[in-house]
Amino acid sequence: MRKAAFVRLTEEQRIELARQLERDALTGRQRRRLQILLLADQDQTDEQIVQATGASASTVERIRKRFAREGLEPAVTEKPRSGAPPKLDGKQEALIVALACSDAPEGHAQWSARLLANRVVEMEIVESISESSVRRLLKKTRSSRGRSGRGASRR
Image (cartoon, one colour):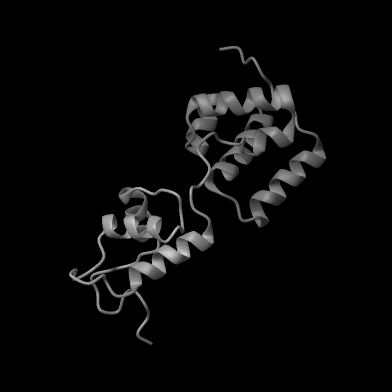
């Protein structure tokens, strides 16, 4: 099978990629990209690279093509991903968590996600927020509205 994109690294590029693999704290994706390029430079087949790195065949092909078209830096770095920007900033998140850790409103044993969402909008912390967003935020912070310690360390 003929390859559409060949990887030929300079000696400096090889040394730099090897150094990054040894010393830098890398994400799994970054590490895999570096390994793919180094193995491709050693004339390994896509199948051999897939076996060695655990990447899919399409990933190996995509990294090769990106290197051939755009060069080393774009081939090893993440492209920005699409998606909605975060709805809450750190201050807003902290205020919601603090509210969840406070005493529940009169007539309620504890805060519910619906109560929190409504109160946060009333207090004008945010313009609007869904119950599920509040739930995800509290889950992310490992907050527990049901425990007496409210998630704080007892030490």
